Length: 263
Image (cartoon, rainbow, N blue to C red; front, side):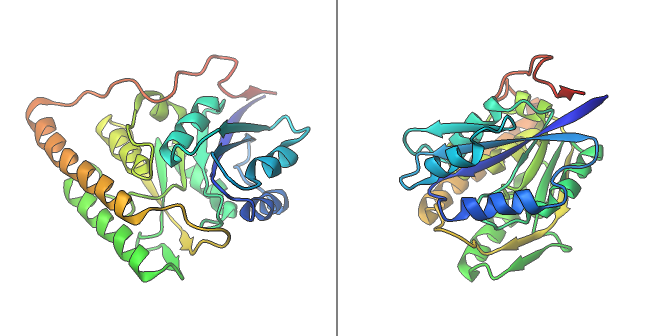
């Protein structure tokens, strides 16, 4: 029987405190993917200066369902996603933060939304979502960016910056992004919409980071988003006038051996 392989990507940077707890939640969860799916874990260590790589190596030791990717120096979350996606084998690729801000138990329902979409983004700012104990300044920044993107982007969703997502592999084979930082999530979402892929929102809860320290550099992130917003406004005008073509994506098409597992 053919079973769909889901690649679960977890970007990591100085997550020595979070990883054992996250792994415990993975192992104690009744189900992380829908029925009829197999699961592989892909952890990418983006130049951590703590014990993250050692812990990952211990957790993955002897397991055939774990792939570890390591950046020797810190390159940013966008670069980490690019490396992890290229290492993936699944027809479906899901992404989850390592810091406990989203609940892994929501993964099966998030993935099921792909029955009618090509990209599903976790959406705490959706009217049916919730935000729990996130600092007011962080919430204001993120919500303001989402409002600005709603005004200029081709897809109208409530949350543009969430890392918690599920993709059909075809999306990442076609859509490319330039940012190595936090902007990458927004670039992928808007690029997918411009390429004609179906985008859906999954209302969910966002909690304050449970373990470790945030890697977000606020001023740098704001500058990057404002620059992209300006370019996106121009792109939208150009698209309406001349049409739009997307170049090849960030990962190569999977071979038949890579596209899912057969049982």
